[in-house]
Image (cartoon, rainbow, N blue to C red):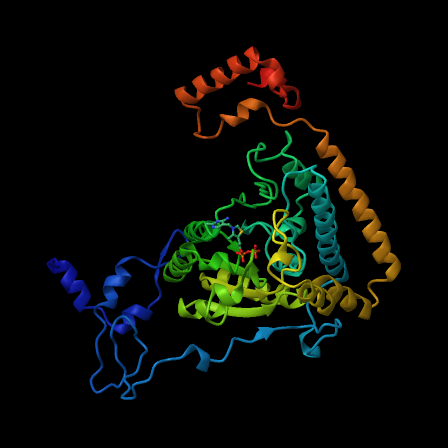
Length: 450
Ligand SMILES: Cc1ncc(C[n+]2csc(CCOP(=O)(O)OP(=O)(O)O)c2C)c(N)n1
């Protein structure tokens, strides 16, 4: 039963009320939850062929019984700015980019790929326990990061090294995490590649797929309420987009009008699962439209297109306070991780073809060379220097001690519980009783680090 004031409120609501400027709370337009109730009171204009069933306000009546078929709907186009030879496809759309910034973007893509190659090899040698490269996806990461504000809040999956590189995560910071040494911000508790940085507004990566998507929406909602001049940005793969969290997140982002840019890296595979087995629709982009979210598909090998698209997406999210979805197309030229041999489920020739056909790094290099901003000598110099810098950071991180053993028990709760303190003492007693069984000296403070 509705109460009388509520009935009155519903009766007095018109379409105009729905389109009026929303109330402002904490500095940003705020959609109140009573809006849902207002929907129920939409008036039906007499003799209109439009239905105003509250669930689909713009649907017209039809006496043709016709199912909508996804195959009849044209696929969303893939936006590009430069072709595979680095030439601008439309000269009226010259990217707004200084030489200095372009060279930083190029350097960060190359740095990501040099670090990836060396770290992949170091895992094969057993020096680190695990690694994931982002080969073929450097353009998505660096291109999008270059279009964001330095303090936009970032949520990643695990293949976004280029975003961190562009933000200023240093090679030492990468290596400290990969070695779980005493300088690792995660105190050695997570697997390699699960980076984080409070300084750079990079939320910690965690393994359960897609959980970061609703987190990013929550962060965006908080930014909206506090009236801050920044947005949340969330990266994920097309495989992760099959999780329930993707649905929950995009739906709430749309209905609560949250300033978040979703960036889906569609690289064709989720470990061994090709996209043909992942979904039947037109990729991830077609879903955005279904949620009422402004959406675009972009060529992820074209760093300029990714940058321009992200710039505009950020602008929409910031000025209109609503979500935007970008689906960036690419191909995962690497194995999924060091625990995967992708030739068990795809032909080597497929991968080799892709490598030869297109690549975000060579495409940008050609673009730079067309402008005489880059030369073969500079390329050799850059790669030699980067290799040296990565190996030096690697050596520094490898010889550092691990975090003090007590960190195993800290940060589970804000303060350790009595049980945890008791377990810590118990571990201390066991280590003292069996000193030869534990390698405590590689941890900061050794036994006293407990
Ligand atoms: C909830 C959950 N299910 C399964 C996994 C195992 N898993 C790790 S990565 C991955 C594939 C993800 O593919 P995609 O999102 O397309 O990203 P990509 O690896 O291609 O970059 C899976 C299934 C996981 N980490 N979390």
